[in-house]
Length: 185
Image (cartoon, rainbow, N blue to C red; front, side, top):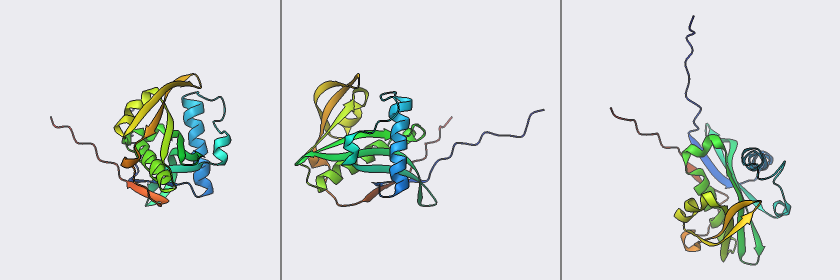
């Protein structure tokens, strides 16, 4: 006998927030997401992707919200000043279930570069996996050189700081997913 069950659509948050990680659960979520993406999914690292940069980096997270409150970290990136005026972004990760929104990675990058610019960045660089280079180019980045990193092809890329106005915000870019347009027969 068939049951009266039906397949409910997956949970879709009504909003996302991007901000500097400031609480213990946000920092824990930041590292857990990085492990999930870079260790379990992509297998770039064996068990953990943490390194010495984490001791000085500013972690930034994207969190999905329930009833207006951040509930789960679904995006992460870190920034740090490697020498006076030169800032770097790294470990950009978005939870697989939230990539369909298509804006979380871009908003994390925007928050990272604008924050660094506000803290005195005169240059902002990142080592970007080759498959993500077109995405970064659309966000006003250009490739400086191709390199191999962790056995994978990467590009050293630089952000056009003129496209990323400095700010002093710790929280910004409240995102609301757009409903998919209905197909017409």
